[in-house]
Amino acid sequence: MEDTFVSGTPTVAQTMAYYLEAVALSRSANTARTYRQGLQAFRRSLHGAGFDAATVEASRVSEDWIAAFARDLKRRSPATERLYLTAASGWYEYLAAEQLAEVNLARVHLLIRQRARRPGQRLPQFPRTAIEDVLSHSNEGPPPADPLVRLRHLRDRAFLMTLADTGLRVHEACRLQRGDIDWDEAQAVLIGKGNRQAVVRFSKRSLGALREYLKARASLDGASGRALSALPVFARHDRGAGRKVLPITTTTGRTIVHEAVAAALGQEAVGTITPHSFRHYFVTTVLRGSGGNLKLAQELARHRNIAVTQRYAHLSDDELDRGYHEVFDSGDEG
Image (cartoon, rainbow, N blue to C red):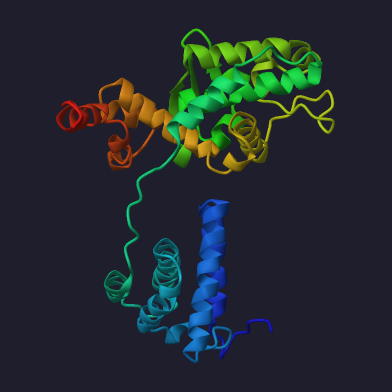
């Protein structure tokens, strides 16, 4: 049944729809989808408490609704609980800002703090040596003789090297254009997470892999009729693309990683390494090579908060490992 006005005032459901429209205009598609799911769960919570969001006037809003919602969310993970409560509290703030209801926002936030669980801080886990095996395997043997298969091979190897040695997120690598790369300075300027401009550095091996791939692609790029600077760094090489130079999607980027993992480690290892695992690998490699320089790792990984970088520090402390074994394992065996 469609939501209707009651006595000329908007209903709870209608104000939620207005709020979600505002979120969709100002936030990412993923955030908008999460908020929509959160408010759908909020509506179910209200229905369980005897309130029909489609008919109850928004002016009758109660701060206690958020407390009941927090209780209902205990069946979900702590992370989902926090996201959904954030969506619901944003709706309360919307009501107050638009003067659609009298809301005690301080009490709303207090109730959330009192009742919401805090998700545990998980340390990033990834198989570092397995990633190095994948990278080594991509360099083994001569490229295939078939031109199209050879292009895919060279592209995939360059893609893996780029993820490992630049810290690029998978969507950033897929959107990379040839004009973004300054080959003399071995870096690229791009718009990263949060629409922030950032400089990304390239290693010699990643640039070498990129050069070999783009050299093999020269005739295709030259026949595209477009400026080289506007062409994608990583292009599709399939029947659907034909002779067009089209960028790969994030789905293709994940497929490249999955296929490389299967080839190097076996089908049973697929899923243990994702494109984001290469970003973990990058941060940890920087920490290991710099003696634990957190500031350097933060800047190169483009972490806004150094606390995020600190989560990786435990993975790079080789000196602690050596010190431990010197203390406990250096004596004669009994």
